[in-house]
Length: 400
Image (cartoon, rainbow, N blue to C red; front, side):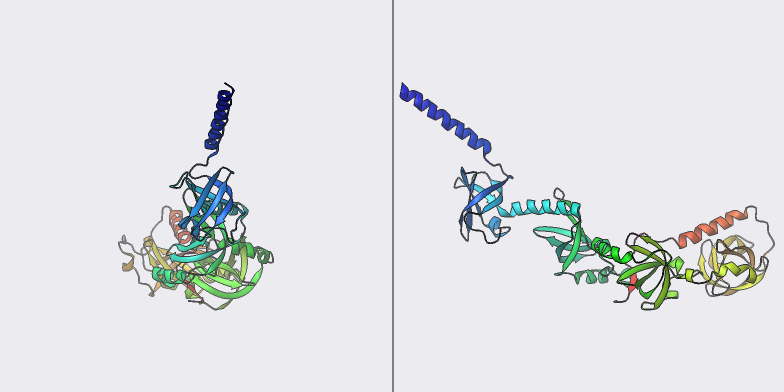
């Protein structure tokens, strides 16, 4: 009887141990910690929780194994299979490495620590990079000004050629986004550059006059290098008091230039050349008067009218309604670009930098709502000088 009781007690203990074993047994996908039992070229055995043995082998061993691993070391691995053909837990260093890498990447998004990544390839949108076992992307918009692809004409083939020059190189970046679920890893070189400029930017303030050189030309303005590797933007409307079609009409890459700082927004510096010059519109009424007949050269034709150069500093606008006594279907019928024509000055607004013209020889007419014509002209001028939010790739640069 005593033997039966003892056997039942033994079975009960064994049952409890077995239940505890299965309760604590790791599941597929779990990251477990264990102690290395043996290290061979083809496999590594690990004791898990003192009750089971796991094995890392093949591809799961070749990629992600800790360096200089030896017996007795404590390691982490991911469970790939709860029981393989030998009754052991199938483990992976590679999967565990990925999990650790994603955790690290997410922490770097929060800490904004500067890290190094390797460029593997490029497409027209940016650079493909690796961060440990993870693959990521560095968008073109997040390159530093030094590495940004400023290609004349925005030629996509040349842009790609420029970007592929970085393949195999290491870049200092910050982590912008890390989402394991979406396998999205985005880094930025620009954020590192902005950080490095903060101390340098502290030396400058709005109103300062600086000297440097033209580093690049774009459709919307000119970039200027100055100081200790800084670069600022001179919007096309801040290059000259008169209207220009493109910065290249006045500037070329490499030109020495003086400018005034008009705005500092984070790492972005906005400059003006024209504010260092006397505003010619302050004395425009000394040279022109309403009703005066003037000779002007047509410099641009738009569907709404003609832009006319009266002198190198003063340009006027002849609205389409002031070009003919009859309705105008095609602006080209009224005048051609480059043609010199006689106009009558019909309005002068120095503060708004606007001068209205009417083609000479037209019948007198009454404009019921002249403010509407002026409003249209104002809208058009604002649209033509509207700054771009992001610098496009279509640029001309010193190192091209």
